[in-house]
Image 1 (tube, helix red, strand yellow):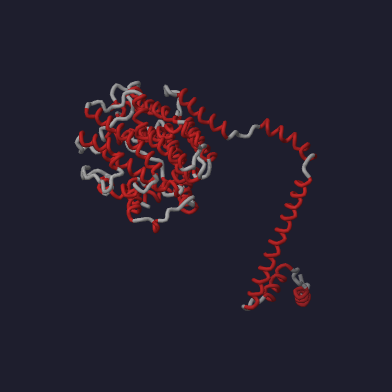
Image 2 (cartoon, helix red, strand yellow):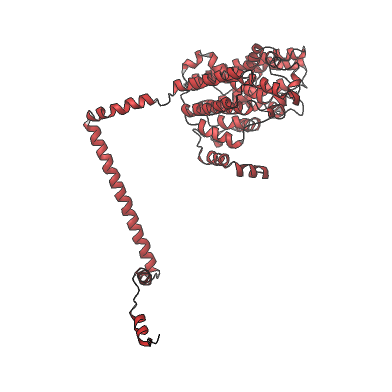
Length: 481
């Protein structure tokens, strides 16, 4: 922790408290046993740590049935993404590798050395034979799902690379934007859902609700695209659809000019609105996850996404630098999101209200954003209704009648509980008395002078004897005055 962090957390003590609580009190539902793993699998998890520490943490706490399949699924897609992002690879070779990646991932000893020396995850593909070795051990039914998603994603990436080479890389319509997000994130949600259901750790009905699976991926991807707009612009990439930004500026680059700040903020709020429309479906999806570690795995990224969305909403900093929620805020969100659906809904409610609070009538999207925020809260209210004052009044009026007809067994149980409490208090007081006696006895054995203490207390609180003083006065009083 640097000096800047010390100063920050001095004034944000609650965030420091959240970090300490997460480090101290978070207990994984399942823990991975590295000592029982072969060397090749240990290497795979090492690469998982290097490529994404945040995802690595939640993956390694998954149920043992899904731990390895999902870890390898992530590494395979990361390898695919590493090929797609590398602009030093020739187009023909890149498209071939992308379209065949689902097959080569199962080939014994396969690796790829065609990435440029500066590519971040190059080493993963150089040592990809460790991944293929472990991947061949995975259950065939899981490999079939992973292969299918990898094939679809590889084809989508290859098509996008071809468009980029033809000068059509920009995302024009919202439909194009949704399609791009589907290929890079929606498909992942689809594959994970199939794995969850196949393992018996999720409600089979989720397999029939493709729009819920897709929303899980799109909500994450769209939020990241909004947050990373400056970084992507610096890298000459543009993912915001022309259909949206062209309503506010003539050219995409104009969003980054200081004189266009208000237009840029209105444009960003339009993007946030587009992402926010998926929020309620994400919560609906989470309700179908039956096992706690799977729930945590899915819930944490969604809660982080809504927190990020609140951070970037009408925030001019997104056009100046890459911004993220603080570590303390992230720990607080993770603590809440690893409990149950109701707690996750509370997280969503809190951040949706922050968005609503920052919303301004000057924004042309003001009404739509207010409606979108209300839609999320309305959905949460339908799952977990808040207390109704009228219902409470009716319950209070019915209480006397219920008391009259109360079951004798319930009355007896309540009486037993009362006496249990009395006995407990007697036991506590008795224990304190015994301990006090033991401590006083030990003090006496070590030479404590209780008689001196008693004399001093007696003198302090007793009435002083004035007889000797009066005798002296009478003796020397000459009465001459």
